[in-house]
Length: 133
Image (cartoon, rainbow, N blue to C red; front, side):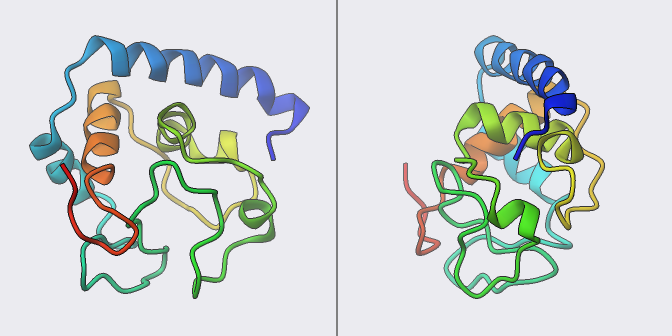
């Protein structure tokens, strides 16, 4: 859940993220390259397995903290967030601003274009890990 103290930071981050997704044409191939920064902890695809972080198949549009078989922090499981493009962009930019007590230790991506491309790449995976166009 976004705390009152972090609400303003989340709103500002979200505005920059929205601007980024509107400014850049999203490139799935570049997003796949960006995902390499995530691959130590997360997986995607038909044969993906849980790692330190959950499998990210079908994450775009999904409820946060709900992937079966993964033990989320209470903060993430109770966040009530939906991983739409805006929320994902804010989280990928500064995870601890969006869900302060999550287990995610990654500091965030700095480049708005990388974030937009990563979201485009993640959106190609359905819940079963098959790619969708």
